[in-house]
Length: 315
Length: 315
Image (cartoon, rainbow over all chains, first blue to last red; front, side, top):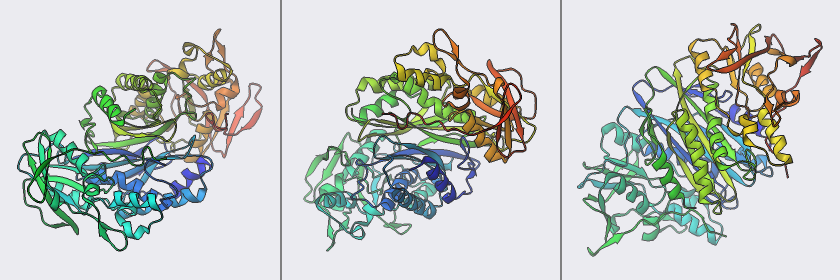
């Protein structure tokens, strides 16, 4: 499909928000930043056969998840999303209808979170579909919640449930699934509201979003904070998926990626529900080094990060 | 090659600049924006076999040009570049050495323009090399030079010479070339200093960078400003390339892309040299509609935009 028509369609459908002075149609977008704020910037690829498969994921789902990846990073800093930029390379054979539906899904998420699509780039790809989403957000100066502030004794908390997205991938390999039975995979909602709540009250000492899996993302916090962690296996909130709904296994909850929940540390007691989202205490920050898993009977064993690999190496 | 090692290498080599509060290693980068400034954001793909070919372009050149594409967009707004973000997807077979040399070229440009590489994303691609560069810049509120401000009677100016990059592509199709003989293709320098100079003095009523070719980029100014343009063929500064050096043809200067010069309109007389760069008056903004080419003998003919197509459709 033509590059020009994609630009035109994005431009027509883009909503200029309060942050956007000049949107699509110039060399750069011009954005307002609230006085006294610092900027947050994150970029995330959405690549065919790495992050999605056309035979598994409807285009609206790919678009929704594409924006969600960026929104979730803003959420993990406690930030306010301000504007999004989409770069998209498409093989010539990709049907226009696919692109329209992808944009519809992306813009649905953009509207829900009131983030204007303010620019981007389009190109013809040598094969398949490659999207790169940029999210720009902001926080009042000095209030961004980093990965590096966790201290021994802090509680470790996670929003929602884990493993649901990885369970969907496992099921998709075996055949068709009903998207409604795997909501967190097909329609993840970035925890922007929870992140903002925690930042405003200064309650999170460190925070990250669970995109690579609990074990890997917790390790990031430990490394950046120079601490260790103890996790109680039984406390991990495991997603209920499928039909009839069944709780996912511990392995998926511990290592499965793309749940887009928030994982954070706090020295204070956190309510069991924030902004309508369940919050669970799953362990505590330790002096370290390393991560420890405490099993139901009290036995302790080393927890190693097992990174989420998308579909890499799949045929 | 592993994603992790690329992140580590970028992280090691990245220089935190004055704008970067928190760089690579968190969910988002945190950036300072000078008080009273507005933000500029631009994203540009660099795709294998679309924007470069591994057999034509040394990796350092691909990296240098990748950053230059973004810097040039900041220049075209009269902006100050603040930080860059690189997203890069690589096929598993891409040699580590290629990536190292690409990064060396990109970081050389980053250092020359004092722009810290503050983050990005890495992934494994299903084929080839895809990079997406994001440049964040800023300007004092309300001073960004848009495409939309040109008025009838303004002079039309261009920096440097045109057509040199397209001439290099034409030559590359025929065989090997010496990079030194096609400097503007292999080592284009973004006109950040010229753009900044014009913005500070409020001299440019509209500006764009010549990335798609003079005819196409002038049309963008005309469309966004609601004006027409008259260009004197003989006035167009044509690049001298090759060995022995020869002036490129009018067609390449009029329609060839990727010269990364600045094209701007001004109601004032502009010096013939700005920040060491030649500036040439090539015509005037007219009431329009449409663009007119005035030939040496005074004959007028319609000028149609002929978009730059990279290597699309090449075998």
